[in-house]
Amino acid sequence: MKITQHIQNAKGKTLFSFELLPPVKGKCIDEIYDAIDPLMEFDPPFIDVTYHREDYIYKQHTSGLLEKVSYRKRPGTVAICAAIMNKYKVDAVPHLICGGFTKEETENALIDLQFLGIDNVLVLRGDARKADAGFIPTPGGHAYATDLLEQVVNMNKGLYLHEDHEAYKTNFCIGVAGYPEKHFEAPNMKTDFSFLKKKVEMGAEFIVTQMFFDIQKYCDFVKLCRENDIHVPIIPGLKPITSSKQLISLPKIFHIDIPEELSEAVLACKSEKEVKEVGIEWMINQCKELVKVGAPVLHFYTMSNPEPTRRIAKAVF
Ligand code: FAD
Image (cartoon, rainbow, N blue to C red; front, side, top):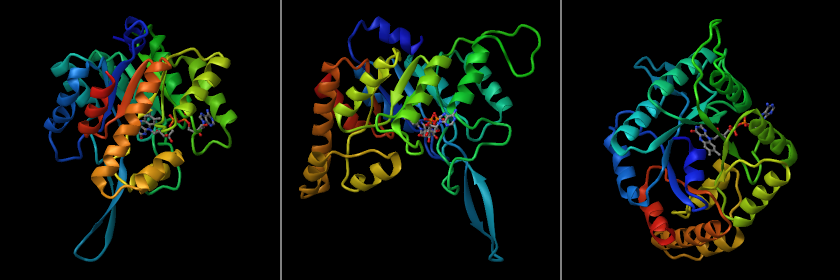
């Protein structure tokens, strides 16, 4: 079922959902099930699975020569989605990225998803490879989420890359990313927002936000969207702080601010156990406020560690 339909069926009640990372290569699917099982009691109507582009690693040969090897650390997104739908009977939402795919490969991946009965996709540009200074599109692939979105929208109209006969119209419900604190590459909020608006005008049916720790930022973002004729559901992305080093790593990786009150509380902790408690408590309060302001879904970036999310969900739902 489409995410928009799940939200409509909930009739204003806030739903619970979460995101998982595929296990690193060499691990088995049980890692996914172990991350899902503790959260099933909160009745998620959908579960997201992230997609990770190939990166480069260097292998040293006995001669001393270094060989640059292309390597995907976390393969398996589509198969994991199929396994989730089969085992739990909930909708799985694969993240679909520009990086690492030609348009042809994207088309074939979308055909696979449609054959598997997957109704929703989250369309993203994708992160840059660690070895690259910025995002480099795959030759023959897409540079921005808008370009990838156009391809999915075209397939929903029956327009494939090379078919000249009338082709099957897929029916994907398409989500996109939104940044309450601006995407880090955008020169300003207005420019970034104009591209978000474009994504919605092109056919995106829901927005999932980057994580944030100040509910006012979400409220301002929703207000900005509504004032600018964006009326699709805006799903807040959430992650509790669980260790003191995240005070540095989260702003660095995700380009978000941590409110002074929260950072001071974390810095005042005497142990990592205490930090985790502070982070979970903060997120419980944040979630209760989000329910009050009518967030359609609380969507947790679990990083495949269900325990903090489970504690938050227990306190909120
Ligand atoms: P875009 O919408 O393409 O925006 C990228 C930048 O370009 C922005 O600065 C924007 O303002 C600008 N821009 C947008 N459109 C245009 C245009 N047409 N012309 C010129 N400039 C433009 N990454 C992964 O690799 N895998 C994942 O599974 C994943 N999941 C995510 C889930 C969520 C909810 C979020 C918020 C992010 C996720 N990311 C993931 C990270 C995401 O890929 C990065 O934040 C990436 O840098 C931007 O992706 P985007 O889809 O927002 O890009």
